[in-house]
Length: 146
Image (cartoon, rainbow, N blue to C red; front, side, top):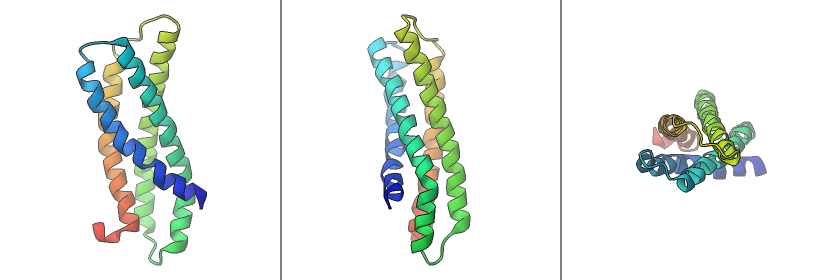
């Protein structure tokens, strides 16, 4: 019971905070205020951790849903899992960029000027995929949504 509750709780965090982080990043692309970027990179790492929790609790949640829903939508669950894997990978890449940048700061070096732009594009792409994945997840429990 615990993994499926953890999945349901944690999946909402990246869906909400990934676009928030992208919106926060956009005005900061021009002015490279180090303090802001450190926070944004740290946020990308935290989102990667939360996305990892969501991803790895997914199979247990699918098993739980299978036991409580009479007409289990196997194809919908597999489609949701596929797009969930893609969002997980993109979120991990975003977290790795955060680690690269923060480790540069810790070593007294300024991170590459390309990292903010790469992170921004990843977050934008992942926002779109996260919204679609969330929609698929909602349709599993609420077939009236499609």
